[in-house]
Image 1 (cartoon, rainbow, N blue to C red):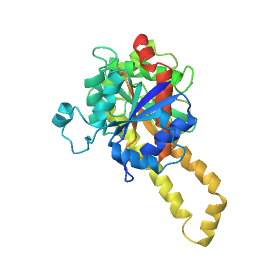
Image 2: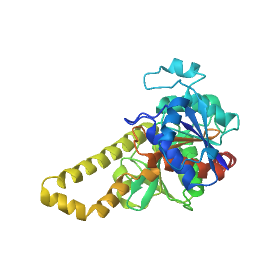
Image 3: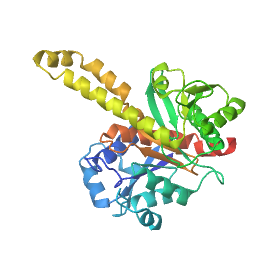
Length: 332
């Protein structure tokens, strides 16, 4: 049975901790070999649990703390902290009480505390933040989207190796196609870093497809993994998220103009829901931090639905059951 530590107070959505707790309850309902430790303010957590039905208390426990790391917490305070919900959740993994952590904590704080408490799989290995991107061919992976300030070609190669293992072991996609995110597909495009990485990828990465532009990555459906430097990767991710929100706003506006448009929306509701789940699927509203000595899952900031948290917890369980960290470490 996998045990997942869920960082409760770090949720930054408008609904606070409610969707996190509801997502945890849904996760243990959906999976019968899952145990969840809710790390946060016990009184608030119990109050939320009482409002929910069919709670299996035999597979939920509470690890109490009132301390929380916020966006306003300074890096010095973060590094000195010993009692926040994030720190205690990570400590549960280090102490081998939990197999994984799920949190929506601020990325910088999450990365810093993860590296400090759990360490990396190898000395000098830089962790990578990977996220799921809806594409024409299904779900693809974008790595790195904000975990590092500076990278070397060797770092990008390690990102690719770790992401391939994750894609095969957790998503079940064998021999995924891999490309380097670039501003063009021609060999002379990209920064010197990308061009040097290209040489390493050609020599060491099976099914390497060369360079791919961000727009082609989304629409072609031919690439399962796109590797990027952190800064452009983060910009690409935020551009994708903005595009998804704009698409949803435009659709909502078009079907709210008058009585006829509302009637059409009612008749087409099933198909509109398909569009919604395609451009922003709750199934993949989370990211992994690969390279850390433990399973570290980051729920996208601002998520306010319990489904996103449920799938993040179930995904962490699957990674733990597949011993993802151990496999990555032995294959680097």
